[in-house]
Amino acid sequence: MANSNGQPDHGLGATLQATTTTGQFSMYDNPPSVWPAFLMGQEASPVRVLLIDDDAHIRRVIAQELMADPRTLLVGQATSVREGRRAIRQHEFDVLLVDLNLGDGEAFEVLEFFRSVRPSAQAVVISVMENDEQVLRAFELGAAGFVGKNSWFGNYAQTVLQVANGGASITPHIARRLLQRFDRAHAPQSKRRADEADKLSIREKEILRMVASGYTSTEIGTRLFISGMTVNTHLRNIYRKLQVRTRAQAVRFASLRGLF
Image (cartoon, rainbow, N blue to C red; front, side):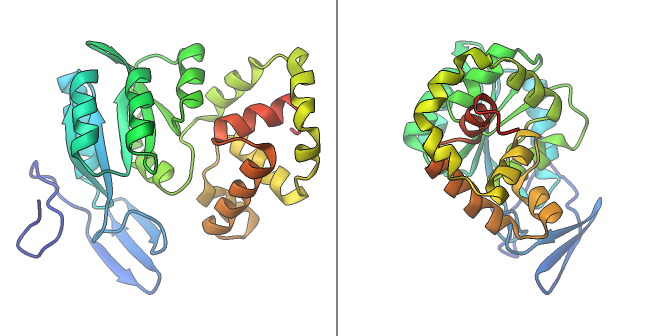
């Protein structure tokens, strides 16, 4: 829905952050931040989000947070696996936020369906608890992030922006716990791709280590003094060399190979 000025209407009477545009950056006054013009999530073209959660209170909290940020736009909601499938077909969106445990099933069913229908979109799983097995399975099914429902205010919009711009929303704590699960006894399996791993450049290995630590493409670029676009190009080369499709798979392979 658009307002009289033709801009996205975020609804719920939310007070949007004031913005001004200067050169290649947009300034957001509340809270103060600088948002580069080349990133997804501009006021005129916000990141579109589909939310699936069976808890009405949580849906309301997340919806209000997303709609209070002009960089994100909630385009639809669903409360179950069945409704979620219908919503995935119906809405055009960039990021899916899906509760791990729904009334008629689990997020895994939604993720499998979502990946086949919206392959270019990203998915983030939300849950009250951090269960290692469930988190690992979610990433193996292509999720780009995992967020606890008890996270501090301001986390959901930032998560959406991170994954929409090539990042992975995962805390260093979860990343460490997941990496510790990979038994190095399985290392022989990775030797089948040893040649590919040896082809990684020093910069690619450095970026892979930072991905494993939970940094987004933008954060990696800032630390290495390169653009987020360049970081994503390195990541695509890493995927090709390691013959993997997701950040989680790349981190897992790198862990087994002892790359960090």
